[in-house]
Length: 168
Image 1 (cartoon, rainbow, N blue to C red):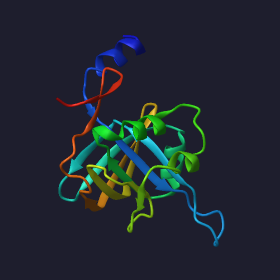
Image 2 (cartoon, rainbow, N blue to C red; image 1 turned 60 degrees about the vertical axis):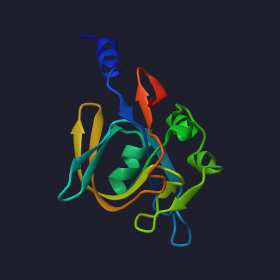
Image 3 (tube, rainbow, N blue to C red; image 1 turned 90 degrees about the horizontal axis):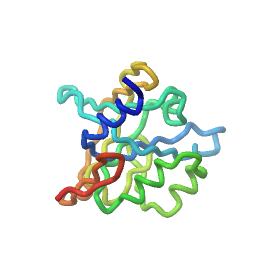
Image 4 (cartoon, helix red, strand yellow; image 1 turned 90 degrees about the vertical axis):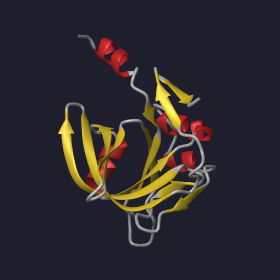
């Protein structure tokens, strides 16, 4: 089986789209670290008791490196009207995260300090419980410390056959 065949087969699995965010530790005691964000479709609920979620990160990506040292992170479940947010944080060779966040309305999570996208369907603030290397990705399992529903009546943004989609 080729990588293309594998990728094509799995592109038939619809997935929800989330923005994973975290704050880099400050470089000195006076500053705040830079906010970092990454679009993810490989995200799922793992357990209700305790409340656990999982995200799959490409090994050695900026987010993988950050979450290896920063245990606090957040998830914003994006609405179908937030496709531009997903696209912006999924770009390869992108500009700095500081500029990416510049005009995205966010609220800072009180538990994690990570940005939470305003108007998201749901937001979760998490602390890493476990990291599992799986091939060219790392599965990061996080305990949900806080969950909110900023826009519970919106419609989800999904990813199917290599494109962002709306339900219905």
